[in-house]
Image 1 (cartoon, one colour):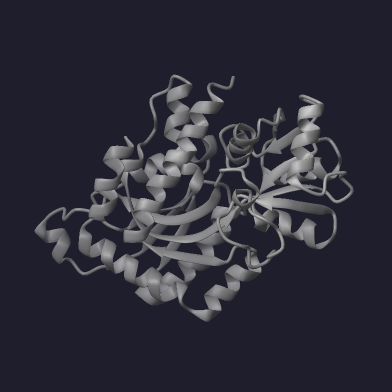
Image 2: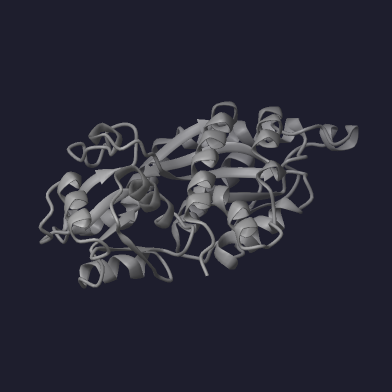
Length: 322
């Protein structure tokens, strides 16, 4: 399936016919589907982006929440939508593991990655490895050593099985050999609350969710899953720099059904490029705790492929979870 993904992504859509290609775009409202509930990370990213795009394209850009099944419902809906540029998806990096998880569980995937073509990456936030501020570990090495000394005594929380807090921790477990137990919660918020309450000992949280607790002195970041220093926490080392060959980023991106005409995709790419360069919008995302990290489709396509390979390998390593 990944072999099919890159030709589709690199093509950035195919011309669906002279009439569609020649039609002015946009000639009406555009809907950005968020496959998660209102108020979550994807929703918080989609709304200011939609407002800015509406001004740039001079057409209403509407955000529609279609949650369910961990993002599968809304994502599948866009995969089957008419490929005309009027129905788009604001997706998170968790999209890459969902088809593989379905296969593990004996279900037919609701969508495949090659059913989408990228417009642009919007944000990219590496997860933070966080513990309570009063935890005894001051480094990842101390944490790993303690976990090995006391097998299964340490627990980490996640937002759910195969999710954006589960996969990076399983990557670290595989790289370090630390026997840490997974405890899934109904979302990232409840997992962090449980960490603060001492019911679990660590978590792999997105910076936007953990930064408030870090700044208030309630949590301590030990490392992050990125490849370059974090602007907001330059003293926090990457796991790669500590010798653990792991990488995981909670990115967001705007994508469209794969058969969307090339001129339409190009028009959307240009609009996103312009709005993400605006200082006002950039400040909105800084305030959100998830700074803009724009990447145009030609660069994002191979980035997505490599990321999907890592995520899907981790899902297979986790295996079937009942």
